[in-house]
Image 1 (cartoon, rainbow, N blue to C red):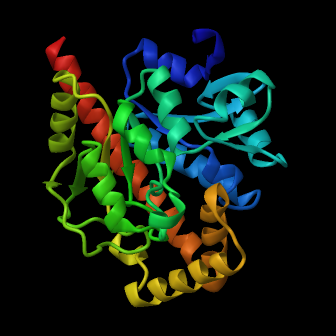
Image 2 (image 1 turned 60 degrees about the vertical axis):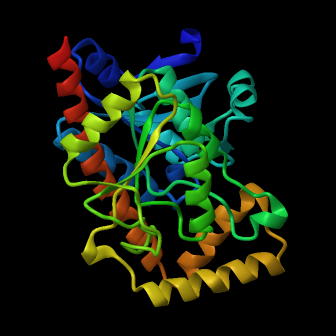
Length: 308
């Protein structure tokens, strides 16, 4: 496996010096927004991680290697390239073998982070059970990955284009803890709350680190969702955004958009219908997640060091 992993110098140094590392996905760069805004955002998120005392590891597939951390030049190339493949678990072997340029989704970032022994991953929102899944069986691979891969995912909940109730049911069935950071309710990505109450609430990063350590010490396989609400000043009005989402979902049905095409279609349409406000909210919540995730990673590293 090691022959396929390639670490940036910054990540390699962090491993040698036992510094906490935070994984970051690359789909948000290649498929989330246009160049150069995508590269600017990626650099800002990486800098937030550094400012909090951790080391960022943006993960991507390049030249037949799984890159664990990108150099500045690699990030620029990745953000400015056309036809980047969106890589999930099923796609990973082919994209690596064929030396294609590939962007890691939540699922693939978790897989690659575990390969690199990174326990903390920060993203915007996880995938989940799509609306109408009782007919289409359209369920994100993210949920299966969370059930078996030992990586904690800090996010602003599941993307609100999904069926949040069924997503929570699925995670419960798979034994994946969803921990609300200073909240009792599942955040709905663009908004701070939803109608779905969580089983676990943590007031501090230390509490979350304790829970994660206990989970993995007990040999309980799988990850955890750290549900971190979008900051209040960046949150969108609930009735407004829910109306936009409903319209986008109807349009997707009319246009026969399904499967892995549905999420990028819906997010793109929501961006258009909100005149870019949804993208501003998305960037704000990713940055907030980077701060919280880095602090949890730091707390987790301290607890591991204490034992040693």
